[in-house]
Length: 362
Ligand code: KG4
Ligand code: ZN
Image (cartoon, protein in one colour):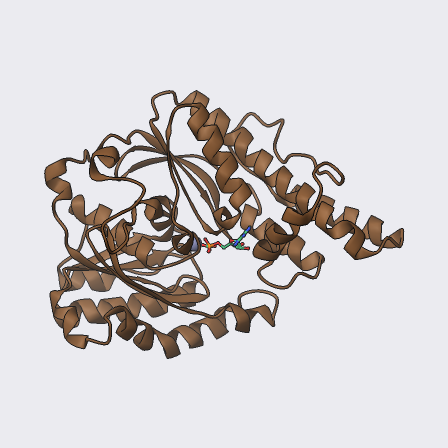
C-alpha cells in the first residue's frame, strides 16, 4: 500500500506485546510516538544455563506479564479503554513463550472489544527505526517515510539474518536468509567457546574494540557464493579450531582473545557488507535501507552498513539503541503499519483462530 500524508495523520493508540523469546515486553504508541516501552528481562536467569530455556521463560512471562502491562499503562488500568488496537507477536519464536503473550492479548482484546493485530516479530525489527520519541522526534519524518520505497531491510538477530525487498509497505520479498546459523547465534556460540557467558554477542563486541585488526583473521562467510544467502556455521567451526590451536600452543588467553574477537567481528561485518552491496546493486530501484535486530548493537556493524548505504545515496534507517534488541514498541509500530493497511481483526471468532506460529516467515 502506498503511504500518504493523509493516512499518516491517523494516530491510533496501539498497545504492543512481545513474549517471543526471553523478554516480556509491553509498549504503548500514539501513531509512531512511543508513550511507554516496558520490559522484564530474563537474561540473567537464562545465562546460568548458557542459553534460553523455553520452560523457564514461559513461567517468567506468566509471572511478569501483568506487571509489565501495568507499567506500560502507567499504572492507570482505565487507560485500556482508550486503546484502539492491540498488536501482539504470534511468530516466529519459541512456541510456548509466544503462547503467553498471545493469550494475554486475546483476552484483553475480547474483554474490551479492541481490534486485534497479529504481528510477525521480524516485521517489528524491520520498522523499529520508525519509532519516534515522546516529543515526536526521530530519524524519519512523515514526508521522508512516504518517499522511502522501494526499500531493502537487513535484519540481523539471534535467530535470523535476512535481506528483504520492500516494494511498498506490506509487500515483501525475501531475497536472502541464513542457510544454517544466524549471525547472532554465531556470536553467542563463539562467545560460549570463549567462556564469555550468555549472550556472547555484547561481550564479544566489547572485546573486539580492544583487539588489533588483522592479527587473527577468519575467512569471510559466503564470499564466493552468488546468492544473497548467509551462512555462519562455518565460521563458528573455524573459531573453535582456532581457539583450540591457540590453547594447545599454551598461549595465554588474555594475549589473544581481543584480537580473536576483532577478527571474528570483522569477518561477520564483511559478510554482511558483501551481501547488502550485492542486494543494492541487483535492486537499483531501492531508495532506502531499513536495518534492525539485536546484532546492530554492534556499533561497528551499524556504522559500516551506514557508510555502505550512504555511498549508494540511499536513506539509512536504523533503530535507536533501546529498540535494537527485542522490545514491544517495535511490535506496536508494526501494528501501526498493519492498521494503516486495514490488516486487523475485530470478530471474536477470527481473533480466537489466531495461533502461534513459531516458524512464521516474512
Ligand atoms: O533481536 P534480538 O534481541 O532477539 C532476537 O530476535 O533474536 O537479538 C539477539 C541477538 C543475540 O544473539 C545477541 O548476542 C545479539 O543479538 N547481540 C549482539 C550485541 N547485542 C546483542 N551481537 C553483537 N554485538 C552486540 N553488541
Ligand atoms: Zn528479535
